Image (cartoon, rainbow, N blue to C red; front, side, top):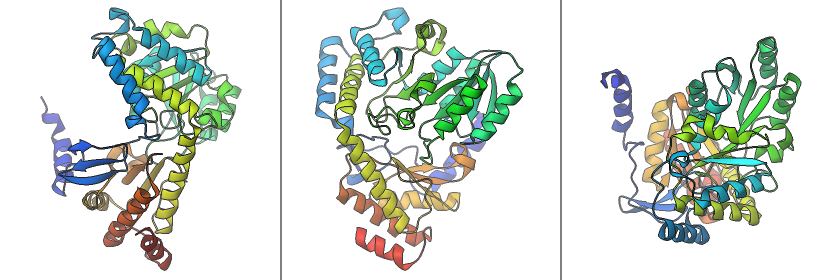
Length: 408
């Protein structure tokens, strides 16, 4: 039955043969939002998407513990079958208020939020226009929807405009789907231009703010807020597993009949709802995201510091300063060696090879946290610089050498 995956298994074995299995890293203990132990050694966590560092926030942890003691460990079923807990509805109202939307619905994972939203919104006879670099959950949601899928070039509003014009004579709704921050390179969508194209064509617009919620915008609502186009965005999708330090996802909208998705979306209807502990910690996380703008400021400062340090050390980076910093690798073999050597130096990052990356080009991906200290960032820059120099994977000049020496 599994013989069809022979090539995939061999590919995985080849990656693992070069050192540690990147899919099998099991930390001994997670010590904080920024550190863990692996094989008895301390490791800096530089690849966990823990943007605001809330996984160990005292209020979030206390709320999760209290909810578990009061309401148990889980709901054991979907909200349609087992009913909603009071916390589910309270969280949706809190989320809608934060996002300044009329309504919101909560899913059990961020992946499921895209899966359930797209499958509920679009169907046969409709059209989904997806940025070519869209996340796997968006493509899987489009597949489940059964709508016609049209890809447009990454971050190219003109290509989107051309494709919408081609589809203008065809019946069915046209839904454009983009992301606030793209997870591999950390680049942002040209959302003002895309919103203008959407408006011209009479289409709908969904923005996945998974990596931009709590990160961008004066109040942390994401790229749409930062670009001043929230009124043009019909649906906002996001996750609780990044800035909010938990698990789960959501979709929010101003459409008056938005709640019909609860009975139109099969991934929502037939999946067990979030446990009380997660609901409680996420609600506290939204409070922190709303009331503590200094977390966003610190995150932005840390992102600039890491980006500047690596750029000065001569590395080719994926995008400008932000919460995601990716090193472009010359080839797959170098990427695998780099990841292993860096882990041995005490820095955990994400090895990104294969179809998950733009153009299939290998990357070493890092996600910044507001909880990182200046000393930890300097340690990371120095370690990455040493490994890059050993592998010849960075610029070899006086400026690079000085930057690494300063970090050390």
